[in-house]
Amino acid sequence: GNVKSAMQGTYHAIQSKHLPRYLAEFEYRFNRRFKLDAIVPRLVRASVQTPPMPGRLLKLAETSW
Image 1 (cartoon, rainbow, N blue to C red):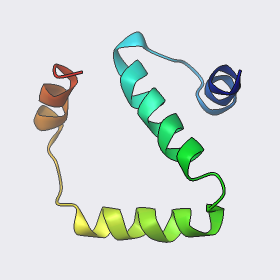
Image 2: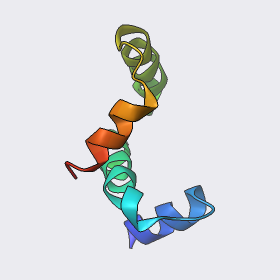
Image 3: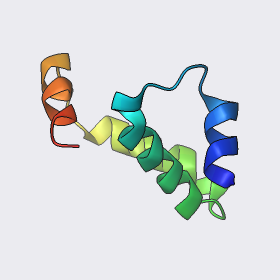
């Protein structure tokens, strides 16, 4: 399937604790696969508009998955 191929082709090692994030990234790319020219500008805009997030907050977010 698409998910398995995408994971094997993108990541060197997959950790189960990060699986929801990998799947969210795959879903994002899959839903926008026909708008490839818009992906980079959208990601740049999102990264500029999003405030920095300390590692401790990222670890807290993992418990909600």
